[in-house]
Length: 547
Image (spheres, helix red, strand yellow):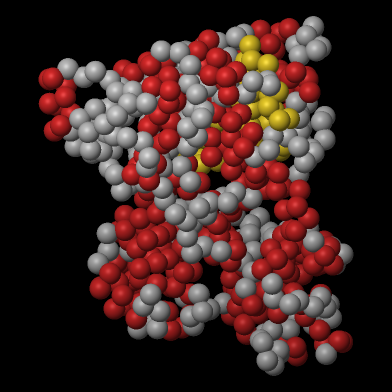
């Protein structure tokens, strides 16, 4: 199996117009070439990546003949990219369960089994996660795992990564060494949204530029009159864009792109390419209708660049989370420590645990709001207003539409009025990016504005019952004392403490374990005068002997 290197050498299967390759090229990857069955798309890929070898052959043929084609550039790849056809899964396609393209992943697996790259990146539409289609994705995941890859799957929204479009794609990442989750932990979302107006800046709205594929469709008078009346909401293809917002997902339904925000015409190929994040010197080959399909079917190159850069960051990321603090702590791990911690913290929770109202619920959004409220806030004080606040914002939809004055008056009594706006923005963000759902993956939680290491871990364990460990001042203090490991209090240390402590959390009753730890650390292992005489762990603890 090819070892990871600092240089990605990529071969692109079902490459289309080469958008996935373009994204990886921007991250410094070497593009060796690709295959597809669409002649125009291959011409586009070849035009923009002239050094690669681009062939019009089916993926089935490559998989079948690869052993005989020993000089093929795919053998030199340490990274396999795959934009497998999505028509059988897409809401804009026919969603035919018997579409033969739905099983092309089998040939991807055959190629991966022979080439053994260190990194595999496949992408598709979110529809592949729907119950009727999930079998295909599950089969791909299982196949990669059987080949020895660690696999992670995420939906990424391109608007979070500098693309002026609310386009979501499913990414499947398999890596030969380490955890595939690390790739998604290393993503770098952007805070600023790019609007349609910003994307179109510099392109004349009423003048064509043929060399840029910026030419207008010849709409008939009746169609033009209809387009004049077109509103922002409408059919999936013919809908008017809004200047100060990102575009909705581009599709090529009936070869018709969305309507220009100001003009009575559909947008041009170049305008669509800008909404996808293509640079202007990326040329598209073939007829206008072919170019529309190529652009609309593409993964946004900036999104692909983000994934490529994240993959390159996994090696230093691994060094950080398994750094000197983790190594010191790992030397103290033992089955006996795990048993003692489990008995102590769960028993303490059962007998002396604090009775906060939020501990009786497991709904993700109220718990997420609770953790935001509890930042730098006394739990007993928060109890006074908690029920009123949760009644106002029980869901992301309610939070996005809440009256700030009403919410602010409740929160002001806790001394944190500014968090009313934070909660409202949180609801709006979750509605737009996650359809109102609170994600459970650690990396996805970290993408939410205002969510850090502690809140991400807390939501995972308290809302979803996933063994995790939220690291706060209690954790720093207890771990430092018990294991006699000094800390400075840096975020990098918190990440390493979490990586160690999460291994000690039991799968059963993990909520009670963590709540018990928080209560134990507050009542027994307090910041100023720890009650060592009452501590059931004092015989193992190193603090009394070193104090």
